[in-house]
Structure formats: C-alpha cells, structure tokens
Image (cartoon, helix red, strand yellow):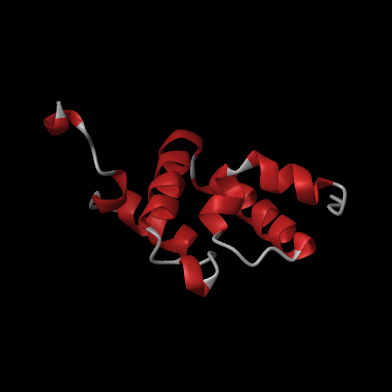
Length: 92
C-alpha cells in the first residue's frame, strides 16, 4: 500500500517551481513544516497556483488579525481556533 503514496511536495518539474513560489509566501517560522508543505502541495495540485495563492493570502490575513502565534498549519486545519478567532476577523 505504501508504494501508492505520492509525495507531492517532492515532485520535480514545473509543479516544484510553483510550490516553491507558494511556500515563499508562508511565514518564515513555518516554511519547513512538512505537514504545511503537503497541504499546500495538495491544494496546488487540485486548485492551481492562483487559487492556492489567494487561499494562502486570506489565511495569512486571518492569522494576523487573530494575533495567533501557534503553528500556521494548526491554524489552517483547526476549525476550533478559527471559530474562536472568528468574531475578530473582518474580511473585505
């Protein structure tokens, strides 16, 4: 079964270049987070670069408005954190 797992973040070619561009947008402290890289690689593969970049910018705004200091990956995946901060978030 493990031979069917595809490591998206390690793929070569144009996909790798797009992922590197998206990863540059991530806060420095979270750039080496493998879980975050995998999540962004998956979104990139499914949604494309423009949609993934927009998603990332929106999440970065939310984390700044919320003054969240934990892991960026945990913020993205944890609905409880987002709901807790939800009342503070104002989207344009």
